Length: 369
Image (tube, rainbow, N blue to C red; front, side):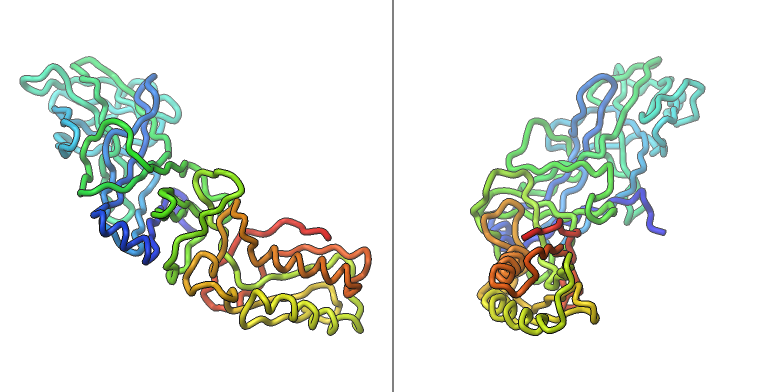
């Protein structure tokens, strides 16, 4: 059984965008948002700073811990931790004793929050300490800071914090892990990872910066590693973030009305002639003997540069037709030409791919003629 507490965001870049990002000496910066008491959720520490690579997976657990520091660093200065990490589940409460160590608290907890019941510690020479919230790294098994409370908390204080499950990331030169930052960053992307991805049921996402657009894509599906070119620029409407719809290289057509035995060969020939205009390595065959389903597979999109977005899928909202659109249009033409029963309807859904490592997509909606 998979660990439902683990989340993974993979930053990947096409070869073309990789070279442009490399020329700007940019690194991947990522943060997590936390709410402190009644204040609005914010992120003020760069959680991870990753150097450019074709694929970089960042994995963590939905598990948090409390710590403290004596000073609030200036922006761009790395945070110094003074205490020990105290694992703290949501709803738990811990006190900081007179020696700066954590201990279970008798104070009541608050569901969904990490709470500090009482601070009974005073660091010499300063009026109060700052609480730090950390998250568990899935690879190292250690906690990393994601938030520092800007409020100084003197002896006798209490506090509460709520991790939001919201990530924000951007590209910026330099390595800034555990550094405090203030203000907004340009060309950022944000995503809520509190719940699993809708199409896969997994806590996994992929993101990529499209240099020509100056925008990020976010996908619930893993991209093919041969991707080398940016996506088309034309969109029906603005969308944020861009969503990549990957081509499965194989579709299953389920008919509402069974195709007669003596009509099947003619239909296959008709569709093959039409779809060969769009696909290379095209194969079309009826599944089984009842004439209720048709399998369409292919090895490539004809005329698309190897590794381009046109070769592996489309952007949601793009004016460019995808493979499913071409198949649906050809079926409509077949219906109008008398190759299908007059009252025929069909569903088009991802089928067995003709390429072993072809990506998968979520189930398609019903297409009616």
